[in-house]
Image (tube, rainbow, N blue to C red; front, side):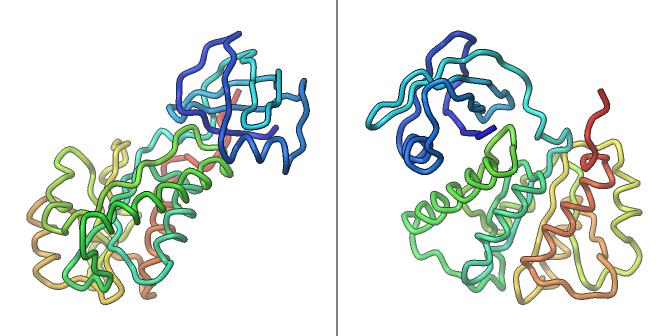
Length: 250
């Protein structure tokens, strides 16, 4: 069943109007017709089965037939703090982490971040683009929400913003604590923050600052992963460890 996001909570028997690119996709690309069934999601964790009532030139009218909880949302909420990488790497990070199940992504400016945002307007434009990527990835992967892409934060602000979360800080020089042991100490935590460093790695004072605010420095093993790989690998490990990669029984 084809699936689309709507920016509102819907009610059974209500008529919902789909406009914009989704409307064109329904009529011109998918070539759906009146009477066809589609699935809608309100982006807040609830799905709706709807029937196309009318296809207009610039909109599609859908009648809601039933409502049910989204099945694509993990119980574990992971917030990914990602140092902004160069090029289009952030696009891939957002797309894949949304598919895996990230709850929110916060771009971070660190001491060794290469990308420079010269103005608030430039940051706003980048975030808007990243949010569109997140929305498309959420639609494709049947998520129940569209993970929010926050405005970029400086490292000093980001590292202090997770007071009530279980915080994981991958660091290549960590030797005592591996990811499995770290997750075992926080296995009852369903709200996890992950901080991923830039291409050039962390500076020593950033690591010390993270530890000061309660972040757990962890090793991901003897291999050095690129910044665009670390978040995906760690997110997948968290989801697997917490049983989020299995279909619910019943």
